[in-house]
Length: 219
Image (cartoon, rainbow, N blue to C red; front, side):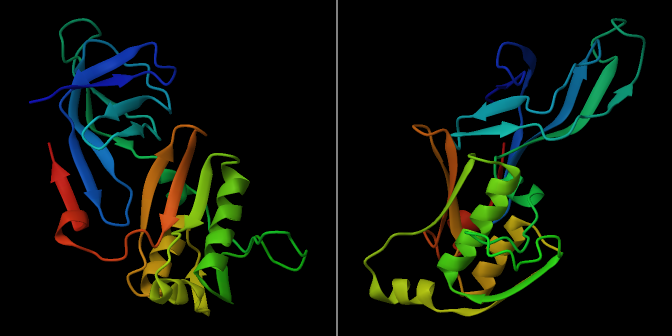
């Protein structure tokens, strides 16, 4: 079975090498999980430590510090400290962290950005702009939210159809999920633009939930 290396966030140190399991479901945040990491000493984890998982082509990062189970004195044997179920998330974890607030492009000073509930009447392009504003507010310059460019008249008409849109006390990931429900089956894909070092969400690039993209869980 293939082994993957966990690097320190700067990339110049190795935390562990092991065999993770990948977990991903359509329209949710994928992650790779190391079920058990044994070490003779405490591991100096940092938020941002990462795994490059070549099977998907993405980098997965540590978003919270694992807590160890101490089984013996340090350096007394190889499993003195055990870390269980250590998860490294794809960058789309940011979408789950960023709240979907009432932020709009070219602020007209009338919105209420601290409200936990957002209700509006817009098309897919308008909601994409709102998600962009929320992501820029917390992760400036890191994300680009766009709508799939297409010559398909029916698909463009779907994107341009204004509808009532509501998210209650949710995240930007919740807003993307609500797009899928409001404009039936208008999903999204995540890519990484290496030339600009920006993560990209393209709404509408994938519109059908299929067997191949619904559930992926494998070693």
